[in-house]
Image 1: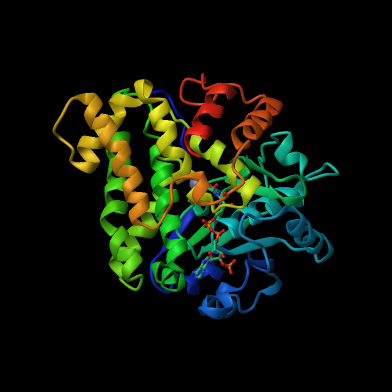
Image 2: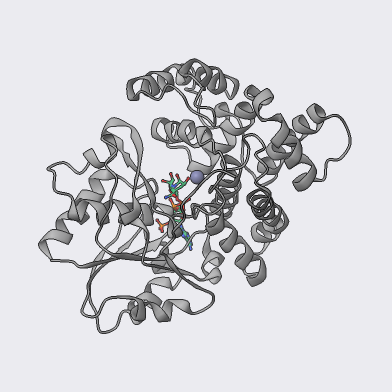
Length: 386
Ligand code: NZQ
Ligand code: ZN
């Protein structure tokens, strides 16, 4: 195992009715900005529960944060934070609302003139305005990590940010919230979390046995609960496993001490920025071509994944590794997720070249666990995914 440091300061409040307990986690006399998305929380009762739990606090609201949180909208919220002397942020939503809140946490204390620089100049946030979250959509892991991804429609960009100051102080994980999530978003959540695990696993063996087995355990759990989640999101036991698996997939634990390869996410973000395709679906488009293209470098881990996660025990190492890629794509397809770019847009010609242009301009010349995946490799992977 490689050397590592690990700290995760986010307190988790897991289970039914935990929303009731948020006031105990917030600073006394906090002036709270309650942030939410397009209004789902007003239809499923979560809004009322949060408002009841915030009794005694001064609360200002900001709704309308869109999926793929938009910089221009967040800048309106930043004005409110400054004008109304807000001291605590409370995100109630999925990854988009939580990521938007992380941006605001950072921007509220940012000294420069243009908060977009936080994203373009890779400025790490060591201290942000304190915030908590009430998760309404298991998927991203944002509720227990310190990263965020922000979109800017004006320039069709989608960029990441983060830093040790951007962990939520607390996050409420109440599995009953998934009951109102549309099937499409449930499938997205499973796919996103599944790919998060694979990005931290599908590299090369370094005998990090525990990390491998935790990762495989999350993958097996997601595979096991997926049909129930899609069929019956009121199944509390399955919902609990789903929610905790998504959090564990990206709270920093399984990536410690092992090589990681975030290429699928790096490429996928461009597909969302260019075409507005749901985040998880972009991953399902890129993953099969990425693993086929990098087959020689990844085949040992692919074969281990085949055996331990999919119970593929027959055949040579190469055959098992190949079967694992096919199985993964089938799993996404069974969730109702298409795995070709042409399933989402007719306008895909030139996509690979545009992504290469962007990566080259940003100096992203070596992606992957060996930092040797060049823009020309990326061009081939994206073209294979058409
Ligand atoms: O906006 P509302 O009305 O709340 O509706 C949302 C939205 O339309 C709806 N929804 C959420 N909870 C619901 C619900 N509908 C009914 N009942 C509920 N309980 O679902 C839709 C999608 O929500 P969104 O927050 O966009 O989804 P998700 O959680 O998948 O977040 C995606 C964003 O997170 C970023 C992605 O790039 C994308 O921008 N990611 C963040 C990461 C991180 N911070 O660590 C890592 C990920 O890889 C990812 O990049
Ligand atoms: Zn993701």
